[in-house]
Length: 623
Image: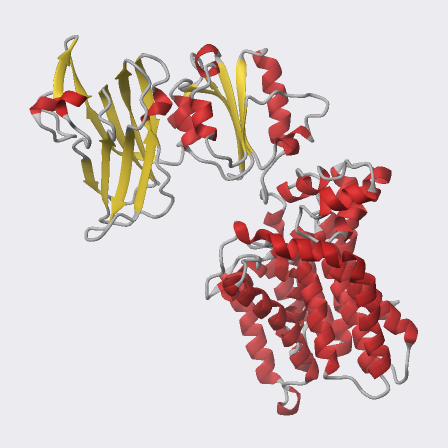
């Protein structure tokens, strides 16, 4: 028993890290995508509608289809098998590393795998990653026994290896790639007595996967995630390794120092062996294939897809630790580094990792009841079904659901409910266009309730007559560094324009664009930018009829050169009613502003439509 105590401790640490709070947070977007594709009447319908449309192999979706029928769809029930798979993966990591590099390396690499945020997170997700990692490690375990541990032919071991390969192939296409690399690598290590059982394992895997080939061919034809995933940068591997080690340069550099230090301590004859080569091939082959496929064919590589290569890079990093006489201090150092710092495992449990659906749905139901129906609901989500998953007992009617289709903002701007309702709730669980807030605020200027989830999701109730100003809620961490108030009087300092563009109306000065002036471009407000985080333009616009093509334009350019940002907002969004209306424009600039950049704001009246502008405000906010 004492002999196995270190392994029991490491696996127990892995279990605690993965079981802790695993059901306390909302299903993620990807999990809900799978769970909302389970309501089918037959297995064939599941494959046609639930698997072929997804882009992943069938195993996890089929497993969830039958498993949730028995266990239900609660967060704890759905995630538990994946958590258990993550725990068992640490065990098999230990078993493989011990055979290749010895007890010390096995314990240290397994301890790191147990405590890193990356594998802990993907063990707590009901998606293919945790299962895929387990099948890859199981495949390598049997592969190693088949090639290096057995002296004679072993058909049972060949069958177990083949089944493990097939499970990985059915789980994720990157775990498929991982075992393919494993299989090809083994061809170079076959001996006469292992040749036929080894080839038999591959034949078994191929036969087991054969029924899935039509589905895989369909997935290849639709191109996977490359439609929205960006191609990797040349330094993607460095970024990934930093992400693996808790997104911390300090942790990554510490691991590098440990590797160099222990390598230097190793005897010359033991600095490299076949298992170093194998570890490098299993990780490097997965990365290089995914990277170059993403560059030249279709972008598919992500941090998550490299999880299947993680154990082998950890084994390689710590493979020379066995040459140290005393390693207790190293275990203590690594454990402390991975748990205590701000980016350690302890902070993992208090951080929002994905968009929140359960919390947003809960507040949607609660706030709708409080408002008594005198409101409208606007939602940004990949699918309204993901929120309805949590609203089964308290259904909510959505007036607008933004899923990325054309004309969504236009339809919101023209909705007559904006004028007739007292309140509006806007919620988002995915990247959103800030212009939805511009449209809403032009009708509902005050904030009644607001709740954020780590800047990954948000739900806000706006009101026409009660609540706090938008700035006090949404710009708490931003400081107003510049404000220009333009009333278009003769001594204005903001907008330079000719006198003919001013008219006097009801004892106030307004900026006018009309056919008689033949004015397509207004004079622009310009300024040299500093450290600005946000720009906002507001004002009043008067029209006799809705505008068609006139717009407000924001552009940003370096001191010398063409515009690097050009944003616009149609004024038609704010002129559905005759008379004076408020317009708001908050151009999306992110972190693209640099010191000395030239900002320009102007009106572009493309069809010389008639309108009046008054009370123009231009505000610049710093961090």
